[in-house]
Image 1 (cartoon, helix red, strand yellow):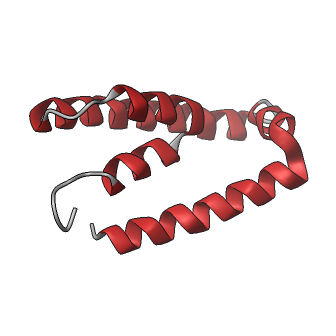
Image 2 (image 1 turned 45 degrees about the horizontal axis):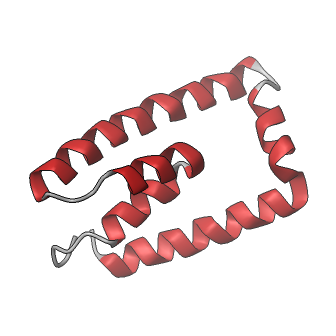
Image 3 (image 1 turned 90 degrees about the horizontal axis):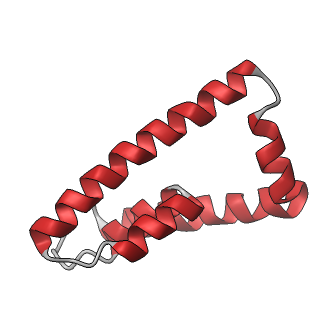
Length: 95
């Protein structure tokens, strides 16, 4: 992945997230999780995928001798933003 693409995804997703929070509020986002079985399935899927991502981030950070705690914390609190920031801040070129 190229960093400009990651920045674009981060900016677009960040703008969308800000709009959703502005319109629905955090309570609206969390209320939608229990709205139906379908929305619960999507949430559980997201939790599983982000858990696998955090395992990968942990191993990758250990291999590259990077501090992982800020990125794991950000992923737990803000989901995809943690992964995107981890990838953007990677020192290796053309990540």
